[in-house]
Length: 338
Image (cartoon, rainbow, N blue to C red):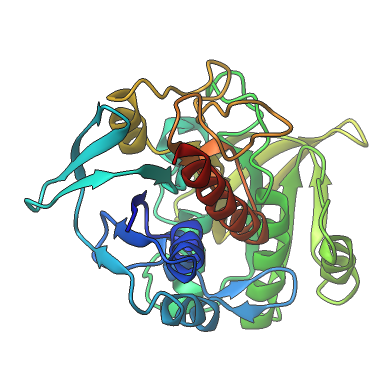
């Protein structure tokens, strides 16, 4: 039986594991966190329909019955031996893999790098991940009992030359709109502002979600970049921006500011992949695929494959589709290898 090592136990890793196991392969899934699920395990509801993230994840985990997996495990070393890859984990397990699939996902841009926004400086500045966790747990002292004015800043660490990330993170706009509606559900009397560059609501149902945010929830969308965030004596946030549609400066006082941090490739995954000569693209740091049209799941090295956000920002459906495509690509590779 052929061995396939899958690095990363998020949605792509889980879906690929399930598909390859059904095909009769011996799958070894490696996840560095204490639990499976990746970022999905930290989400409350999914856009655009508000589906429970917990229910989706539970279904995915139920489908990997029979797959051998390790949590709190990291790839210590990986190297090519003849036509197979010798994968050594830090828990002492060694696997000779006929194929390796990277489903290592993404990590969020560190919002504290944008000092002008005040994350890590002012208590009431949080990130999209912090807010999503609050929706799930209702546990975050930074979110006061009855905020009256709440702001969202789009494109934090994305489409930003100074941050070194010129690319769009794809899901931030939809996430901001989703969270703006949900925060209004929690605090109906609050005024909610979204500061955006331009809205990229590309997916099915996304535009309807945006229209609902305006019509049903009264969210105010301001086209312009936030230039400065300060804190007054009452610990309220004073936000300065420019409305680029009217050409006028905007100054608002908020009780909470949410920064929509974008996606980056995982630094740990880059280090592991470098051991076998797999590199990130120079322009964005995400993994380089064999080509940009026909072989999106293939790396530049035989027997090494990708799925999900390790090759660029993805929605959850995108990641699941890529996982299924990667499973088929691996299956075809192993058949041709015989």
